[in-house]
Image (cartoon, rainbow, N blue to C red):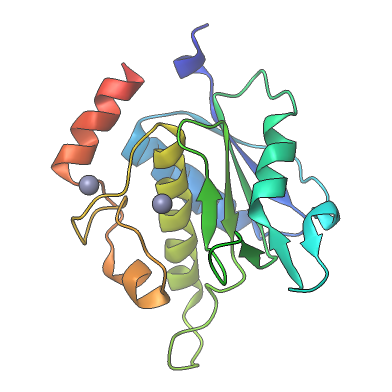
Amino acid sequence: MTSNKKPVGLVPLGKVPEIVLKVMADHITRCFKLATQILPPLGQPEYALDEKRLQYNAGIIIETFESMLFSDHHKIIAVLNQDLFIPIFTHVFGEARQGGTCGLVSLFRLAKNPDGSSPSGSLIHERATKVALHELGHLFNLLHCEHKLCLMHFSGSIEELDEMSLHLCEYCSIYLQDKLG
Ligand SMILES: [Zn+2]
Ligand SMILES: [Zn+2]
């Protein structure tokens, strides 16, 4: 079995609604043409809690996951409810290393609109799915894209995330196909 034939594993860290994982899995198959598998939950990454910021250090969680053996899976997307940061940003919706094996998605900031109102469940799922697909793109070495609708456009705010579509632009699609061989 070549690595491309192995599924992308989706791992909840702590309690994550199963529907979110299912919507993500569905879109990964549609957009990346890859099989997916939802894995049993792992514990919350308390080892990555920064006591001063009261947020979780995304880099530490990724390092931990990338040192674990997921030999049955091509790439891993871990999903959690905790707020994530990387040192140069106040927060991130998700994080992944270019060409890495594990990406992270945080649901923490997705359940509130910029005006303080509450989004529908389906909008929260859509936001989480966009973050998951974006981070998976990085795991396949896709870089940020200037096309505002493209999944690989950088989004630092909910507004930007909502503006983005659930698709890769033509350029990024071709690049991904090339990477997936
Ligand atoms: Zn990015
Ligand atoms: Zn693009």
